[in-house]
Amino acid sequence: MTITANWSYPTAIRFGAGRISEIADACSAAGISKPLLVTDKGLANMEITQNTLDLLDAAGLGRAIFADVDPNPNGKNVEDGLKAYHEGGHNGVVAFGGGSGLDLGKVLAFMAGQKRPIWDFEDVGDWWTRADVGAIDPIVAVPTTAGTGSEVGRASVITNTETHEKKIIFHPKILPSVVICDPELTVGMPPFITAGTGMDAFAHCLEAFCSPHYHPMSQGMALEGMRLVKENLPRAFKDGTDIEARAHMMSAAAMGATAFQKGLGAIHALSHPIGAHHHTHHGTTNAVVMQEVLKFNRDAAESVLIHASHYLGIEGGFDGFFEFVGELNTMLGIPKNLTELGVTNPDIDRLVKDALADPSTGGNPVEMTADNTRTLIEACL
Image (cartoon, rainbow, N blue to C red):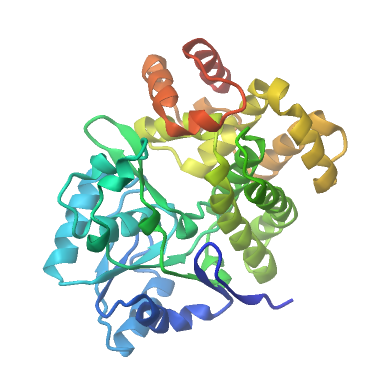
């Protein structure tokens, strides 16, 4: 089945195989005449990246690239990227790649004309209103993985290298003006990245669905997103060239990131500080802690997960859902615990402190405290 569509929610999305060919037109639609393509080090010299630069160059838009982006993008990356952006005289960003490239690219366009430090725009209260809206440059986003959903997000996660804390930088204008979702760009993902990013999409949908906040639109999107992951992640993992499964996973990623406007929870509250301190892959970390968080939230989330199980065709209610997650992790080769993931000699006091400070805690169906969060982290180890 060929999947091609143009969507205007939550932003303009050009969805379908081969639509990277429209990158120059997407830049024109966003008002970008001299883009800086921002991606990560691993993607910089890959064929999909060079082909995209060729398309931009052929359209007279240049072929400028910034790829000094770490797996968990940080303040130093922002500083270096802004220097390259200003020295090149750019007026917009093509954010290209997985979560790291997308998050950094969006922040560079957001910070292009700001006079305050980036940390002044953390997702706390109304801090986003501090930004000079007229100084935010346009963004075209091109995801090359199917997990983070950052292409349709109004925030970026950036690590403060001085405090080793992941900070969520938020502003409505961080949402890209145009998105190209081309599942052909994800075909080259190795299986372990397919697994980790896919479980990130599932975590977004799962936590949004269990969040106690009121947002029926997100609720429906989260439920359908879980179904798409359940039916298509195993296919994409086993056969990376299955373009239909890749397309459905790309949809699920965008759906998860849109749905979590309703809230995230303990999965992300743990994975953010763990990733910041131990440099673990974000989506894989989410998958590793997922079952322990399900047990942690059982009393408050069991009824909604029974409903989800019915929709997903999983027998056994909450217990069946819990077993499904474990079986999926095993099939995908996800490490069984944080120790196996590479988290050794953790500073649990610091992880507890940072987890409780993470904005994701507010969407967890069970209140997170110092005591129960410590117990949860120890169980994940």
